[in-house]
Image 1 (cartoon, one colour):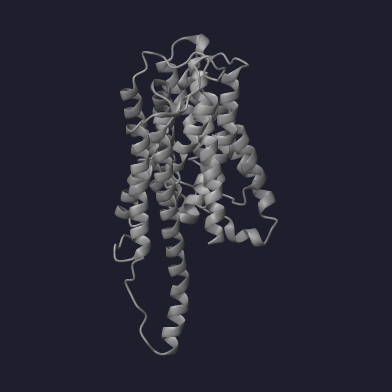
Image 2 (tube, helix red, strand yellow; image 1 turned 30 degrees about the vertical axis):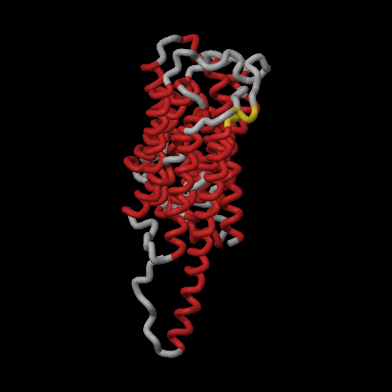
Length: 379
């Protein structure tokens, strides 16, 4: 239970970082920052940081072939190999395989596409709408996890019922925030000095933004499930993140060069644009990516996806505080519903873990009385 609370705190912190980035990114885009160039620079700046962390903290030595790693990181791995071999306790972790080139390419392509769709969607709409669409991630992830048998569904068991009901309630809260506005509670004058100095563009298409954000949500659910399979086979979060980040830089650079032909868009300006890029590189690409993969290996894809509904609450607060958005009654009602659904799912996960811990004790008691163990138990 304590470990679940720690992991929950980690994911809540990461979700806060992501919502903060969406708010800053929207403000920077309103001042002329290109979303495609932003993705390239964010991953490019994060790459040396990830490589350094991998060199300092990674305990794995990977054998040849190193075909899935760019040549610049091959030198890092070879130089780090002699240091890792000095510890006898670490020898049990040596020679862990790496994801194949195809697996690495799929992870990177998914990550690149998600970032592209998400930030283009934010440009056309708002961080709040993008967060609302991301609340579809738990539902998609839950269905995919059941299909791939990463999660068990038995409505006769209270933990499964709690997870199912909590997911539906959270999505209902997100839809309430999106579709029901209600009277204003906190009104921020348009003349106030906020990050979003130019205000939203009158030509912004909320339909297009919502559609692109929904595509990003579906792809993120697929990525969570696929990441679970990869990281359980290759338990090296830092190395997998470095490989994927390198591929994302190459792929996003190609897409950005095709989509953005204006050379001036690639010039970094020492203002809010640079702050958004550094923020994204350090806290999102580096920290969030590694933390998410680590939690996925511990708890599975659904646990990580379940924190997405909390993001819209954070997005509303940041939108009111920094972008001058008006707080409506629908946002408050939706936030309360989301909180109820979130805690329902957490209760179901905690009860499921307790049942898993009780199974060995029940097995020992049954064997002492020569009673066959209960088989095909579904949690």
